[in-house]
Amino acid sequence: MKYTDLSYINDITMGDSNMLEELIMLFIDQVDEFEENFERLLEEKDWDKLGKEAHKAKSSVATFGLKELANELKELQLLTQKEEKIEEYPNYIKLFSEQCDAAVIELKEHLKQIT
Image (cartoon, rainbow, N blue to C red):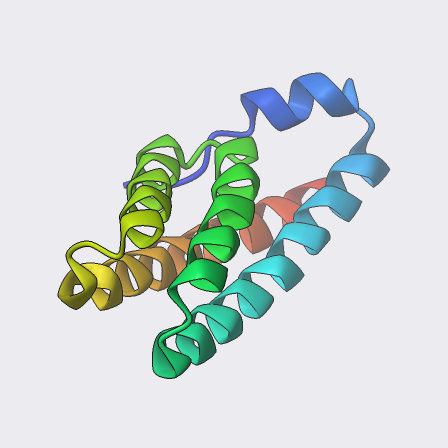
């Protein structure tokens, strides 16, 4: 199963492999940061900030073609705004981690091919 779709990112970099490499590295760093923030905010029960973090993460994952995950993050964002289904928040975070970890592996393989 392929997690990422680089067609959008290839369009915006217009084939510039250096720019593509930079954007991939930025995304990989962001994933680590998002995972840490999600875990911390979940532990702190800071639903407002959790929703805002989901919003930021949604944009990043959408850019790299993880559309279904982007939709899940939007759902999480909307749930946190109403503080509904709080017991399900960890499931969204787990899904984010699993899919992004797999996406990072794919992207690292892609980096090997372009560098």
